[in-house]
Length: 396
Image 1 (cartoon, helix red, strand yellow):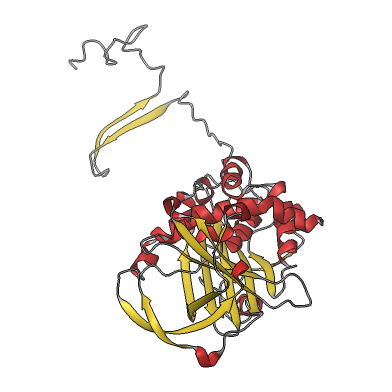
Image 2 (image 1 turned 135 degrees about the vertical axis):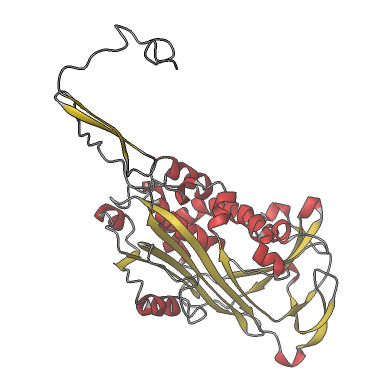
């Protein structure tokens, strides 16, 4: 097993774990719910982007990111590099990460992430970064999904792009309008593709509360640069949630049950999904809280006090007769956190020589009383102050 493959095996469980937790949060996102429940997201893209900044984390910030990602600090840097290189062995998949900064970034941090290019961030001219996003996603995402503001001093973007052809394409002439019932029970007529698949490419697995989910794998054509992409479609019970059904796609072989059939036929609507997720609140639901506050500790990244300000992901998925296209751009924006504690500068004033006293009215304009103490002050309280703190015989 190569080092890269070992890295993917080692961190694959962490990425799947992130996916299962994040899908619950995404499905509950108000933007997703208001749109009818449709969404596309990239768990791997989120893991890669957060792992890059986790490589610069210390203290409680690192511990929280470790709990979500399975790595932080120096371990995250090595894991990120290994996973990115391993993913690059998947045919038709491109992986890229870039960072742009106005804050100083430690050389050791940059050198620990050799696969990331670093540049200067100019919030007034994003043309270079937009062009990078466009190229890295094969044109599926044309620009940054969120624009940095004047308070953004560090910007990191992970891009994933896939364009794969089916090993056996759908016959376009067989695509026709067929019924599709949405989550609210409304029926639609949609362009639907049909074809047969090998019986070994379809199975059922226990899913939502033990209810079976059906999984169909559509094989992608093998290329010259690596292993073909694995594409699986999952169908759960009519009332099952996305977060409960989608993990069935990576259920282990031992959990699969074959269909008692000689052939499997499928009807699959053509689709195009595009989602823009503001995921910084998702991090809090996933247990990462300190990283977004003034107490964030990214002291292994920069001498400046930085915190995560925004995490935004745009993801697009297209499925048609000839193949599948998908891309995701995950953006992590960082701004200044609280200023580091400064040494206390104390200027001591001792009223140990003649001094004056002025009592003014509430407006600070009228001197009600003035006094000047030129001789040694007379101790009106005696050796010890009374219990109420006032001088004896004062009437208070």
